[in-house]
Image 1 (cartoon, one colour):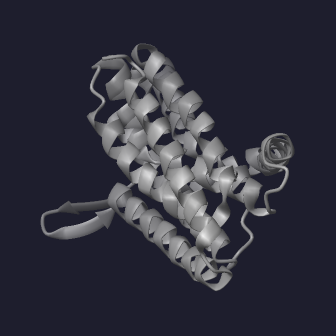
Image 2 (cartoon, helix red, strand yellow; image 1 turned 135 degrees about the vertical axis):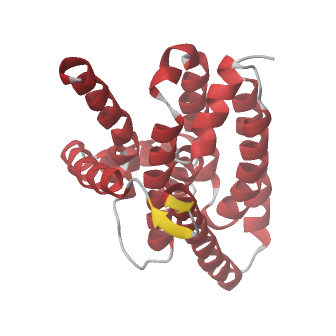
Image 3 (cartoon, one colour; image 1 turned 180 degrees about the vertical axis):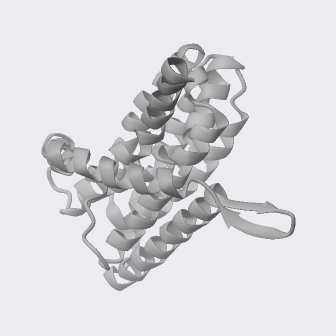
Length: 247
C-alpha cells in the first residue's frame, strides 16, 4: 500500500462529493438551500461538541471528569494571538478570491467560504492525523478510508449550499495528510496519543466555531485560530525539554 493511498482516496471522494453537491445546487430552490445551510451549520456544531466532549471527558471509579482543560485554554489563547498577528484568515480569504477569479469567475461570494469551511472541517480532526500516521508508517489506510466516506458525504452537503469552493479543500487535504504520512516516521514520536487527543480537543472547538459562523451567530475568524490546533505539540516539546534539563 502506498504511504499516501488513503489521502488519495480521501481527495477523490471529496471531489466526487463536491461535484454531486454542485449538481444538486443547480436544481435546488434558494429557500431549500438556505434551510439546508442551517442544517449543515447545526451538524457541524454537533460534530464539534461531540469531538470536544469525547477528547476531554474522563471516567474513573464511577465519576466523570475532564482532562487537558488548561492545555486547551492556553492553546486557544496563544494560538488566537499568533493567528491574529499573522492574520491567517485574511490570507485564506485572499487565496479563495484568487482561486475564484482563476477557476470560477461566475461563482457567487460563497466560493471562499466553501473553500475555507471545507478545508478546516476536513483537516482539524484527529482522524486526519491518526489516519495519515497509520497510512504512512504501518501502510494501513482503514482510518483514512472511513474519513474519506465521511468527507465525501460532507462534501455533497457543503457543495450543495456553498458551491465549487469546496472542491479546492481537496488540495489542502492532500498537502496536510500527505505530509504527515510521508514524514510519519520522523514525527510520530512527537504525536503521542496524549498530544493527538489534545489537538482533537482544540480542533473540535474550532469545528464548533465553524458551525456558529455558518449559522451567522458569530463572525469568528476561525482561520486565525488555526495555530491553536498545533500548540499541544509545542507544549509537549517544552515539557520534554524541561524534563531533560531539570528532570
